[in-house]
Amino acid sequence: MKRHTRPIDRIVIHCAATPAGRDVTVAEIRRWHVEERGWDDIGYHWVVGLDGSVWPGREEAWQGAHVAGHNNGSIGVCYVGGTDGRGDPADTRTPEQRRVLPELLEAIAARHGHVGEDGRRRRALFGHRDLDEGKACPSFDVAQDYGRAVAERPAAET
Image (cartoon, rainbow, N blue to C red):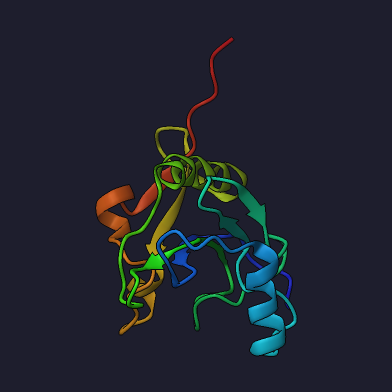
């Protein structure tokens, strides 16, 4: 694995391509990537479970393996779900995932973002399908739901 040699400039959202309601753990996704694909670790930096639990995957300091040609300088976030019972793409985010994902994105932006004119840190935000033509992942339109930039909430004034 390569350590990042430049700042993070993208956050990429993925789905696990698992059927609605089927919970999988970060350990199971890691097994898919390591044992079945031969990678050295899970490709994602963060995984969001059906119940809204946020699990660390690959360390953020290490380059991910989640979208060809865009791994250097990006953080990969995966939510469990993304397909219907037939395996077709479907937005299966649970209410808990819908609540937690923006919070996680803001936290990542706070750690890695550049400071915009408004004094808030920002990162470019993409779905896997925005960077890899022909993919349906993450099974929803990231720009429509979250915009193209995520910003941390400003700190409370004291």
